[in-house]
Length: 324
Image 1 (spheres, rainbow, N blue to C red):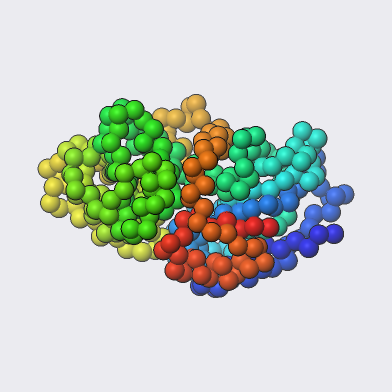
Image 2: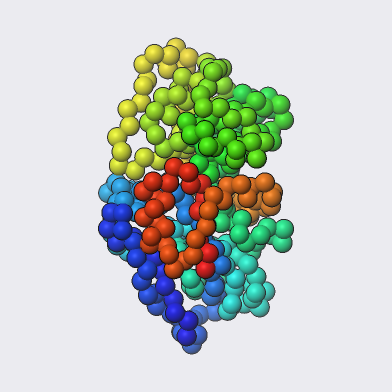
């Protein structure tokens, strides 16, 4: 019987590997699959808030991951970027590499409907970006950018870079991506994006804020042209945020709206569901240039130390890949 382990956050800034129960074959129901994990990805923004106990009590239920165990603030098993191989289950899924919104665990059993096979062209190593790509897609859907739009992205974590990369493929757009960390320039250029450490124009049709810092939202408001749209994709947890709604906010008739991956925009819900959006995200990840978003990797056995390092001071971390 395999030794099954899962990563749990147990106190602010502290995590550990714990044994996980193994479902015996005779207890499993039909329609279930067992997945042997190959890789998982660390979603540094949200997982940092979880790891440090900064989820507001009002959001305890809404922020639950699909296969989370435990309750906020601690102890909690949390995560949603797992890629593995089906080792038990229906014949049509046996041996397939799949993505699942599952926490960091080396082997698990879930309903077959909870896994999505990877496209043949997508390496399992890159598929850990799927949840981030879904978030980026949802942000573009919320913004509705069009041909020729002048677009800025402020904050170049994985989601910000994916938003910029997607927006840059709309014909005629002028896309500028901005981060105060000059080290982000190399990865931005690898994705074909125009990088800056500041915005010199205030004529943007759409500005995406993805930095997670209140100062970035202030920059976004200043960079947006009359009747323009600011899409707030950062989530601050329990951090208070002062929004500067004086100055030009009213005279320019700016539109500020939130975007959150948990809900598909209403105007798309009649035609799209979460499964279809995930399939789209996986297909878009087939572009080899997106390997630039993987900034490092480490072994699963070292995950308690890895999380303490990259979730406390991970300024140079994009997507960190856990290898099983």
